[in-house]
Length: 48
Ligand SMILES: [Zn+2]
Image (tube, rainbow, N blue to C red):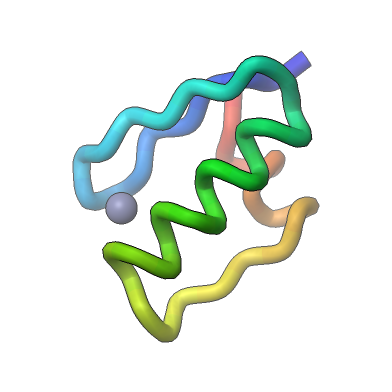
């Protein structure tokens, strides 16, 4: 299961599970990268 993601801006995101990671990443994108949208598949593709 992928639970970690390193955003290109340097932010390190850790989730409890994949659902949590996707949710946290989307929250981060909304707050820090307005206009950038990724769906679940794309987020999990760059997660590890
Ligand atoms: Zn970021």
